[in-house]
Image 1 (tube, rainbow, N blue to C red):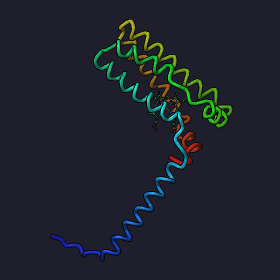
Image 2: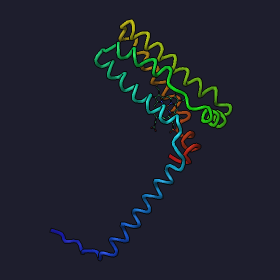
Image 3: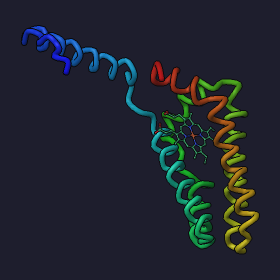
Length: 152
Ligand code: HEC
């Protein structure tokens, strides 16, 4: 068995204090500003999409039909935040809105497919919804968080 040389108590205490302050600093550096309202809207979209996967897996089209409008008509950030985002987007605003439109249209189609119990179409439309999410994230998520939170 290996017996590590015991460290003097004061060194350990100093290490703990140092680590604690580094942790505090990192937490601040990673998240300097309050979360955007969009983040909560997105988190809800993520939960709704997971619930849709559950509905598809159990062929519960009623559940999918109920969830689809929540995805299509997700809430918007408050006007002040919307203005900040639009200002930051500048000439990219159309592309950003285009992705949101793709998600909207695909979710509406998914809801209609679920209402008529057409599982194949639900799955095809679900993929289109997810492609809209991915496309926007690939173009905008990183620059968005860098701009509004400073890092991440
Ligand atoms: C028009 C652009 C756009 C579309 C479309 C979009 N997102 Fe996002 N999403 C973002 C941006 C920007 C962020 C970063 C927000 C932030 O960190 O404040 C984000 C972040 C997220 C997050 C992380 C939230 C967190 O807690 O950090 C989730 C989950 C998410 N989106 C899910 C989805 C899902 C699911 C869809 C499709 C149904 C979707 N998004 C469609 C722009 C979009």
